[in-house]
Each structure stands twice: as C-alpha cells, then as structure tokens.
Image (cartoon, rainbow, N blue to C red; front, side, top):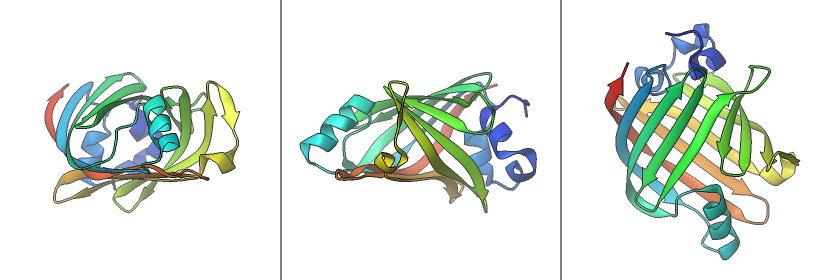
Length: 183
C-alpha cells in the first residue's frame, strides 16, 4: 500500500486492515479503477430540491439504476465519476490541509468528512461545508449519513442527505463490483 493513498492514510493502518476486503479494494491505491453495479436513488420531488441536485451535479431519483464508477487516483487526490441512468455525478476527494479529514468537492460545494472505521465499514461523518469557498453554517448542512461497507463480497454504499426545510435532497444506496483495475 502506497503511504500517500488517500483512504488508507485517513483511516490509519491499524483500522485499515480490519475493513472488509471489498471496501479496502475500492478505497485502496490502484491508480485507475472501474466498477459497475446498481443504485436506488431517492430524493424530494419539489423544485428547490431538483434545482439543488442539478447545481451540485447529483443524479435524479429512480429505482434500480445501472451505475458505472470510474476512480482516477493521482497521489493523494481522487476523481470519482459516477454514471447513473438519470445523471452523472463527479467529485474530487482529497485530504484537508491539516491531513486529518477528507474534502469532497461537488460542483460549487465542498464537504468535509472525518472517516471512522465501524466494524468492517467506513462511516463518513460530515463536519463542515463550504459553498463557493464560503463557510456554510453547520445547521444548514442538515443530516448526512454516508457509509461504505460490503455485502456478499461486493462493495455496498448508502448515502442519505437531508436538509432543513428541503427534506431529503438525495439518498442513494446499492452495490458495485470492480470490473477493471490498472496498477
């Protein structure tokens, strides 16, 4: 494992080895990775939620959407491109300047997470957010559940973001299997 790999560095060597094999493989240090699977995407159907999803580059709701993922790693930075049936979602993940948290850039929004091992899973705990570089009050970020785990040998994910007044902005859960890795 390369020492500068993003997720192993943030989780720590002691906890990394206890993660499920599918989680370690997806979040490891392979420079290029492709995976395919299925996701169920949910979200409020009112116009403010639809507009905010569009601005942030989030997919639209739909049952059992085919999902293709590409991860491109360049040192401590990763670009995740997710192709859902109803939209494409691209984000850049990297360590914060102090090296302790994960920063995910989604369009104009940057989200900052602390990553913790929970059994064989990774629990992503939202700490703060910035919109166009400006801090967003924590109360306005609502509740975010984000978990990476495994089931039946596959990588399994569950993300659920709920905002004050808007309700469920997006929730997507499903599974992925790695189809190609380039070392």
